[in-house]
Length: 233
Image (cartoon, rainbow, N blue to C red; front, side):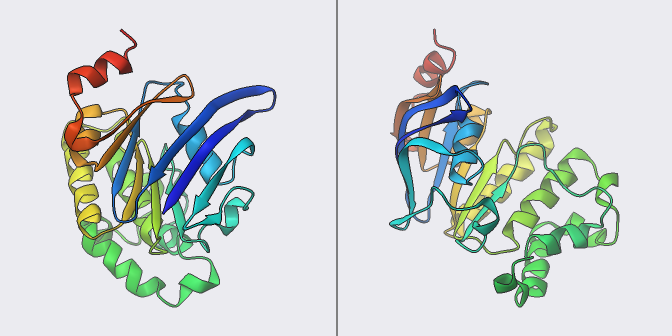
């Protein structure tokens, strides 16, 4: 599905990613973990065309993805749920959802996908006319996730969904991630909650200082060894 090979990228003269290589198989949940400043979000931005590559390549189903514009990603079957939700607070829940299906190719199925989103997130259905800015942090994250699903993406990228949320809400979100995985969706998850991330993943990549320092099937990951690397002990 997604192949990242020897990627270097950064911001101006500051390089963040150093020869990053990893693959995301179709129908699996791949998690990328690591401390703050490891380069996780920069890698996602590089995939989405927000950060240009200075070296390497990113390919989706064998076709080059690097160099594509960010606004064309939905048409390529890629959707990202960004860190910090980034919902439109002065718009209703349903208006936020419809923006997730804005490209012409996705508009015909927008109402059906909206109902699927409401079925997955019943709290949103109850408040569909409510302004998004009045939602709690957990509800806002659910809205961001539902909006990301509106285009029925082939590849779903999720950045730090548990950030700043209460444990009970985090548990609920990871139950939803498990359901999405069971549906056969291809997911890239960036997450700092190592226990939750490893528990839901098929494959785990650990980043440190812009490099991948561990890559293992989730079933083989030792959390103790992972934390040793995570905290650079």
